[in-house]
Image (cartoon, rainbow, N blue to C red):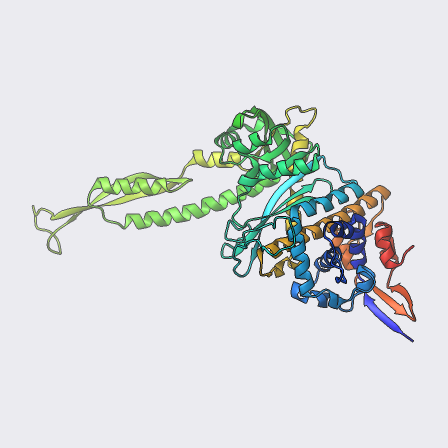
Length: 540
């Protein structure tokens, strides 16, 4: 009896979504396969996505070992063995991707996904994040011997502002534009490690618009909001957070009275609106107060007040021990110290005079002091006006949009779209998860690192498409599946679904194949994914 058992687990779902996109075919259409290659570049990328969404700690140099014991041929194609996925083949595939043009290639694949999954693009969310790397990465020059006629995308891995809070490491930047519908990335660009969001965001939106030509509202954080950027965006519709560094926004948040704010239909928010012409662009501003943020900001303010009072009291005690040559110097030092504090100041300032004599002991009658020194006496008191302003602006932020007509976009809809900005942030959290292989980015050339980052973006594309599809079908059919706590849910994470498929095997028994451990729950879940995923589990 001939029996072979291979692990299939959740990888059939991943492979099915890749097939549904048409990812392998699109890559192989753009990157010609060498006649001696056993596995095409598209198949290598599919294998890397399976590895990336395998949720195991498998560094890229153990890539072929990841497929040992798995149903490799079943997932990737007849004749493909784990040993074909060696690091040399991966490196050549990454070079081919880089030579082709990473952003262009990703966009072509995302366009297929947009078409085949009927993605809604009413709102698009732009954000960026930094990815830190170990090691030293020198600037590359183009290889004159390369066969590609395309220009090689060069990424400068260097020090910059680290959103990972690792300024000691070099980094690259990743810019992503996601749909508000399912957080699906439609645009991924790899940028230099010292790149500024404010300098490139408007250019990225323009580039995206030229490639996609979608009638969407672009949503971004405060890095987009500058006079130059909003002028550059022209007629494109946008929503963004106004930075508090803009004086008008700061004054509005501080001065607007509570009774002016109107309860939003979104629980926990109050809104007031006004018009503004910042940067010469006529726009609508929303001053928004969040109840949750208000409570958090007030707690943080109390902590800052307590901390500053402690510091101010300590600094005053130190100052009161100092001797000054004249009263004017003592008073000047007290005023300087008081100016350093934001929420406190000195009051009841008194200058004490100490007489000093040539000899120790009690001075003789009518003996004149040799010299005088002066010391400060004062008290630390809160500055009530400043603290009141801080309390008033707590929980408040300002949003701006150039969509002026409330019939087209209401205040509540603006707030809802901005809250959807978490879509791109969720994507970065996914990519930086320790179970994902981004923690093992160690490749020794910048362009291979950039190509691997693009593959990471493809992993995010596949994951979000699968999660969106599952949730949509559950909502449409009014069905649920059990979550981690065995309670019904219609919004499961795809990661949890992947965990549900542990210990699913592909069994070869006397030249017949079957899938074992397909429980009723697993079969129910597979029905929500459709034929491309079901075929890997031999479900007709």
